[in-house]
Image 1 (cartoon, rainbow, N blue to C red):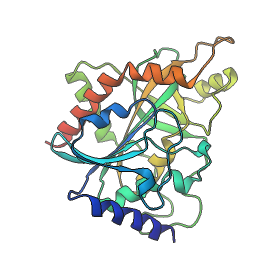
Image 2: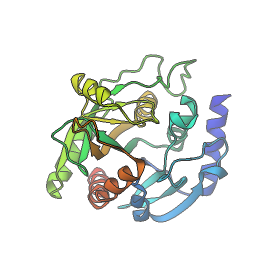
Image 3: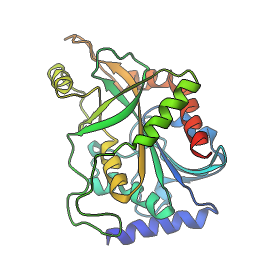
Image 4: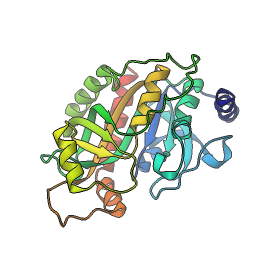
Length: 272
């Protein structure tokens, strides 16, 4: 039944477009401006797509945009779905499997995250090299062999070739990027000071409430993944430090130009 829902959503989107998207984009909190760079775009609201969830979080516009960036056919999620919104993991990752049926081969996933690494600064862009999962695994339950194997490897969860390409593009465009491990929690509460310290001890550089479920399902489907985080706030071991979603959006907005320039460069270099 789940496969039929995914196919119906995919067929609906196919009926609205004339191109096959090969690169998928997921734009996290405050990063939706990249969608303005998509040419010849067709915009479909999530609520119009069969079985598609609807974004409820500020900073997530809730549109699926299909078009071109640098002559490459892309499909862009202007906003994602979160476990903390009350969606189950099948719903959170539903669009990834839809992308697979549409022909997507690579996924660029972005997010806003809290800096665990004390050397980071607000507004830094972090290239995700690996992750730690503290959320329910989206592959729990019956496996559908049409998408992937029962026990998929996560050894190359963030494709090493795409990581190398991103570093090269960043150097060419004089964009300073960090590299690190992303840890995913359920949210929606921000982390305590003790949790930040614990995450640092176990090897995390940034923490967020998304991304990892989509990355796991994309790998299960055979889609190569590139992950980018904008550091929206940094843990300073200050018991009086406060966090807010508005602060996240404000700090992410300051990095929009570099994020857009970087992703455009990656897509352009990938197309050569």
